Length: 273
Image 1: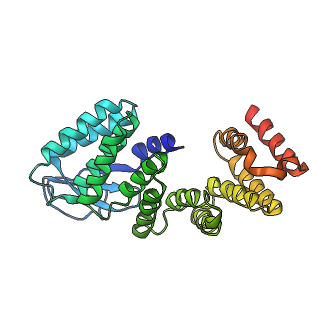
Image 2: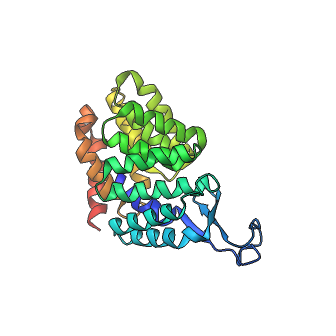
Image 3: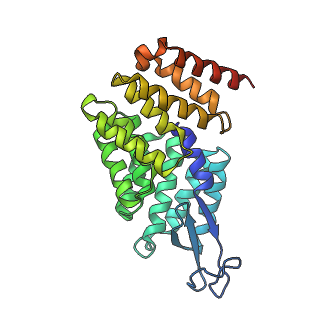
């Protein structure tokens, strides 16, 4: 899941709008005019970041290499962009943080986990409002079983971006690891799919939590909802089926019910198509 998230995010989270010499975007009349030498970089949340053109070509090359799976080369280009930024870190703090965040993603995908953590730390230090870096650091801490740190990172990402469904879902997963925190997990999963109704992962996670609580009726209800949504996504049935098989012990007595058997059969049939 983490790897899929990073690949998706690197390809789609950022696109660049180049400004003309007069400072206006060639294809967006609403773009703020900054003058020559700068570029507006938009993130997936619709926010804008001011970037200097002298570092932009390296950033774009890094994004291209990342999208093609060449993470080592991507790291190299992001590093060159950061070198160009020396002396301008404060003037372009948001873009500086953005570069560090993307180099962290590349390093993580290239197996350099400690180096990635260093970049995420530097990214949030450069721009304490960089919710993407907090979220990425949370994922890394989660994968390294530093759960309290991960919860703190996801919580900070949520504070900065209140509609961050993935942050709610991932924090919920960590809360679900403790029986005493099941209530918080249910709240986070519910919030996640309320924010993103087509996001079936938190609905599936709700099914697991209710199964662990011994509430088979609610567990089966949410499992059915997750199945319906998964059938509307590419390869969703196979991925959900794989998750259920991995987590089947958590469903306990529910596995012996007719409803559970019907769900498994439906997913198996759909995965074959």
